[in-house]
Image (cartoon, rainbow, N blue to C red; front, side):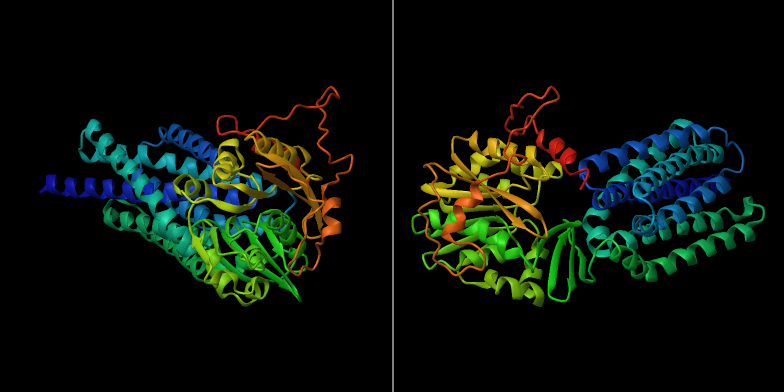
Length: 517
């Protein structure tokens, strides 16, 4: 009988360790996602949060050796701590970002990451000791608790990626996981109640924490929305978390703005200056272009400009996120901008990574427009490498041309000219253009083709709001502070090198360039 009771209690411990490890890994990747969204540079933030979380676990494990008595109560209050701190983490992070001085949000995120990591590291040694105390051998208890922990880590990662983040978002996910932590603590408290003094006090404390988290689960996101609204100049009219990014539309009178993970993608007041420069020089340079490829551009506005050309027979658009395209096809504000271009019978949309699409495609295109977000993380940096532009080149017809959005030659001069150098390293002839887009600032493009590029004799036939033939030549002239004369620390002209998969130095240049903007 005693052996059966010990077995039941040890099984409870194994199940508890598995569930709390699921919660721990979810909080770990949640903190990385929060850092990526609010602070930028996903690789940097995930690296820091994982490192700090593991460091915290080490600290917690070291401190736990001092706990030799009241193991169950220690475990319960550790879970209460994880629940309340982790559960309110996303909510408070948005609040601090909205109202606190610059830099406070980063300090807070790294602090709670380390703290929750320490509490998580505190759990396992306690559970192992409790299993051993019950009568399970140390080797067996350690192996089983660690197995539950590692298996739970896998489950937690999968849950966050495929369920919590896309379905619940970061605020609700944190509250929900916190509820699970406190539920585990209350279940363990009840099952071990005969061993616990002042059971009622602990139970009431847990119930209060659970009620706070439940209230946060139902009402926290709405309040967090008011915090997030302060991050944007105009009122938010649409917000969703897709499988890939946070999509936000704001509107102030006639100015509609699209943001992806906090980065501005377009403003309805001046998007035509950007999209006309992206599309019409390349389309006019091509010899009656028939087969067109757009990489990115899920908002559909570039596609609208392409479809102004009667020679176009097919337009392929590759955008990773189906949610952006769905919004472009159904949202009234975006439909007013793109004229329903993505619903045109000539348009085929593929939801794939642009690199992967080009690797597997055997199509040739007369014009390829590369309208991708800036290289502000490792996954996007891959799409600004010599290898990627070589793939683009290999899908151009003999007379084909590509146009690449290439960030700002004013704010990120070295970034812009490194992109240009990278494209030129594929053997293509290049031409550099830039245009003033008030919502972005001065913005650059790189045009490339196998044949020499001369914009002087081009004719832009479709109706435009900004661009004409006389203006084309002026877009190729750069001021002294943006002409690619990058100086090193000794005042000598710096030699730029192509960005490659092996040497992805563009992302570091990008971070330095934009840190003051």
